[in-house]
Length: 119
Length: 119
Image (cartoon, chains in turn green, blue):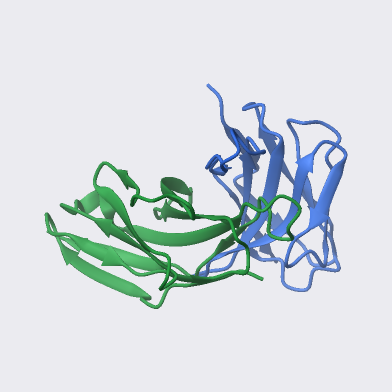
């Protein structure tokens, strides 16, 4: 079984500063993917960044970077130079990539972190 | 434009009635998913389908049913057996499969969601 834990119900950050959103996970799958999604108040889910369990380097996508520490089973999202439009709910998710495994292709989500960016 | 559409955006249902939520995608994706989101919570998987004419139960399938007669469509029926159906329902699709021996990230693309309220 897979489990995602996001321990920060809410975070506040000043505009233009960096913020780290925490995510820890647990899985028995040897191969898996980690995702971050953003959900604004409109409800849509916006894909931000992906990290594969065998990737040697941390993923980066523009202002988003994923601090992947496999031994600690953590996949924290770092948002640099925060903008007012970054205010939203952020979800960490995991997908099993072991074909034939019970978690294959299925996303398991954490509870989310509400990020508020102050001007 | 390619994407996922869900209809209706808002849906009201009387207790004891079945209701069907529509999900259509023109991305030529193989896999489709239904999630439920309760206020302030993460997404929970209801049903998913990796291929036409096949689907599997997710974590909270009781009181729901699906069909996958066409690749583009994955309707969800909320039956009267679902005791607490008021929630936000999100449909997603994914290209599916692995690429080149390493898992392709093939992120899930989400529709805009349907807010179901039971009166």
